[in-house]
Image (cartoon, rainbow, N blue to C red):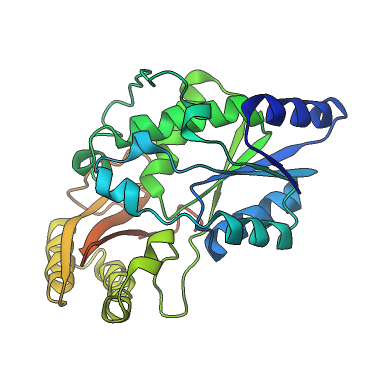
Length: 285
């Protein structure tokens, strides 16, 4: 595996490979790699000649400085995992390398970045869009792989690629879960033993909402889900929303023809966890 820390070296190396006609699959990450990340890399391996990964904790997508400081950084362990999964290229830049000047670009995503995560983390998705666009320009991949766990982020990136007419295929990949249903996340390692035992309730409640879909109103299903989660010690629901999977707008009634997803963010102790679940079969998870 080739490891680069500069944009110039990364671009130079990958350009030689693409000039040979090799396809590049790309998985952008913030490190602290887990099996969910590995599954993205494995999918990239199946569909491309070269697999590239980036590890960069992007400061401009954090709303709270304390969250940025607490974000796990495990580069040596990450490198070992990438070698095991046959990753060909790792780009691991510094903040100064990525942002020699302040990042001032602004994107217009309409309502997509104003609801759910966007409502509670203003500016977050603009920071995500800036770094992903920059990474695409550096790596120039044929395909880029993103997990469905970050459902709203996936929609934002798909919209950015479409709006800017970027020449990259966005490949959504299934959410990987622990045996008890907890969605895999780099943040999970920050959970205490008690919090880790409570956390799987998020997925159980989402499945409960799926069972109730069509039998009670979406509003009542949301209220039921919030009340169930808030019963658990240390758990506080930031939002739980049932929305159209295409437009992320709230729904007032069930429509079998419309793809629907329930998304939630839950604070468990000092750790913020997000998850979602498709409520019908219009989208393959």
